[in-house]
Length: 158
Image (cartoon, rainbow, N blue to C red; front, side, top):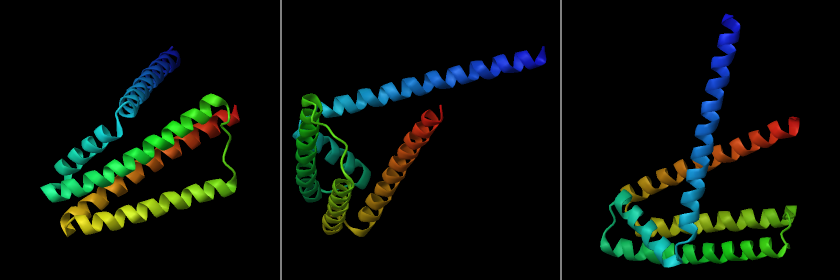
């Protein structure tokens, strides 16, 4: 009788956690959808304001960072539109190993350039704070990637 009760409680706990994860995933999708609906100008302004609050930027720093954010937002919007067009037309294919390498190099080059730009704009304390935030974001991204990989491996087992 005790064993049955323990199993029932375990199944109930599992069900509750699964529902929480589903709600959390839905909230993230809603937020990302709202961000995609913003124009490049709105996204750049929003990101600049967040950085201003986080790094305590002055007026000239805000203006310089806003131009950088606007460039990044327009590039990101263009890439998303291109990706969406390929997906809808059915031309979507998995990238080859060479294409992946090229994309990874481009991404790293962009990060290096961004770091250099930020180093010229921010003072030492602000730059250290910005770099710390970048590292935390990278760790979050790695955790998400690890979860996806683990989920794929579990599904492959079944």
